[in-house]
Length: 90
Image (cartoon, rainbow, N blue to C red):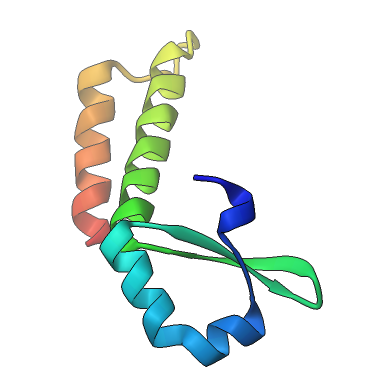
């Protein structure tokens, strides 16, 4: 994804919201929305957002299992905690 192709102004979003959302969902795109020439928000397909959150969760898991302190949990306990958190998140 090229950032230059995914930047839209807030006025563009207001005028073309339905079409933009359709494009985002159909093509799993992410857009940067600007206000007064400054990036303010991201509009993203929900599936891409969920994948990003899952990736971040896995990266946190890896970071936790690499911790060598006595308080660090084993990988089975960590996955169990992660599953519980994901169940509660839904």
